[in-house]
Length: 235
Image (tube, rainbow, N blue to C red):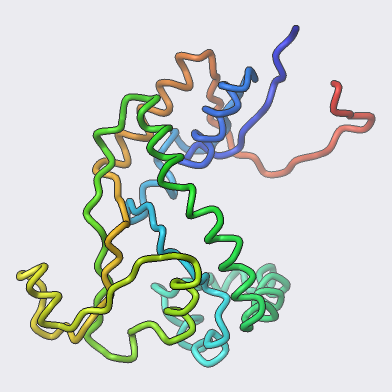
């Protein structure tokens, strides 16, 4: 029986993980990316397996904070103004979903995924020989300006999602991390959060495992996907 041939576009942590599990399912996989595997977006993160990562950014207060979001390069929805024309339809749909009902719906689905993220990563990293690159130290979120602290709806959504969260004063935070600034007014501790010690090495191990299973990598940019006429699932 011939193996199914599948192309995976993107060779970051998502693409490499997808390719890994497709190979385990008996598929022949081609990985496509305009950059070398693991050198794109997957290198620019905080290395967290964030069980606390709800709610999303589609929160009602986005409407009030929209000017600051749009004009700050470090905001979660910063955009390039040269592309505003193409982005406008997406931006309109996004803003339509910045309401309490949509926020809670998004949080519910995200929470479902996050609950299994740690166990899935533990299994994956063990299978590629990278289990020693995952550590459990928890996460601290701190603030200097009280306006930066989470609001009651954010706190409640995390509680409803089963996230363990502990509110700390500035003094309690400095007892845990003495080198942090005296200006810190408070924060939240997420004790069950994990993080990786070397994302680059994890990506490299995943890629080498992919190659050892007969995977192929194609360094090209994908600009469009065109469905083939007459295509069916048996082909």
